[in-house]
Length: 265
Ligand SMILES: [Zn+2]
Ligand SMILES: [Zn+2]
Image (cartoon, rainbow, N blue to C red; front, side, top):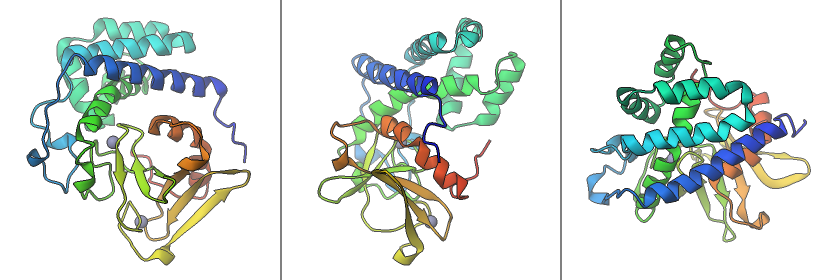
């Protein structure tokens, strides 16, 4: 197993995007107010699809798209032209549509958009999703005080992303940690986070030699997996997005073994 299957350049681009998203989160946080209270929500479902008003203002989202495109350009000079074509031609109507369809992770919409506008098939969705994340993170911040009361099966209780990362703190407490919105959600019982099977003999673990920072938890029942990071072994506090990126070789191992969801695309 070669842990460097992902190029250094790809990792650097992703890290730059993560840094930009953190910066944008602070900036947008100062410009908008998300007033949410826990009484508005049904605790069995994620917060995002239950929002009555969009947590993403169109004007700021557009700014986010432009900022993320500016991060990608120097890393991928071949995309420069396409990126500027996207940002120049994006109408107000498109922007609102991008918000809606990126929230629901509508790959079909973005594929059609790419074909219609003669763009690389993956690029619009990638850009739309990355531009959305600062807003997801603001929503997560706003709901952190009551998120542990949620009982959502299989996905992040804030943004609805399927679980793929958890961390264990110094006291042995396990938190699901969402790389899309940075929600930390306390796991209450030992069970598969995907299907809920709590027969412990159905969960097993895969370790990677010479890398004891994380391990892979696999469920025999649903064949899905979760990466578990031991936070104590990492000296600095890292975002979920960064931990997810730094443990990407664990995903390759799990997927090589045939675990995980079939990609929906
Ligand atoms: Zn999330
Ligand atoms: Zn399972």
